[in-house]
Image (cartoon, rainbow, N blue to C red; front, top):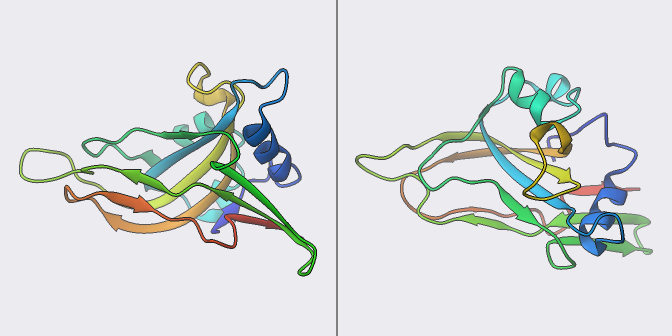
Length: 161
């Protein structure tokens, strides 16, 4: 992980739990994955409290051909692993694939620098001002028409000890 966001550092596990279990009051909650082609330094990026604030600052979301944010919910999309032996909890979103990302010759390609994972209390109906950023991860990839696969570390995108 490159960084976690100050607004959610104390609640990242809670947000994963809401996305995984979708309890009453959060039946449409989930995780959102977005890609950035321009990103601020982690120390500055981590100060933003919503996706809207991130995108209003010096950060630019991807716009390559076939790009759309990914949404995740449920047990296989928001995995929480309690490891008593190592004394931690690992939080891992599902790996994500963008099919035919970018391409040649008459399409848009991007050089990507960050993967954002956020919590949306109402997937698909909320605004960027409601998405709470959880973690940002370094990414070095350029789209070219092949599938773009983002694999989160098997040991978790975030770890609470």
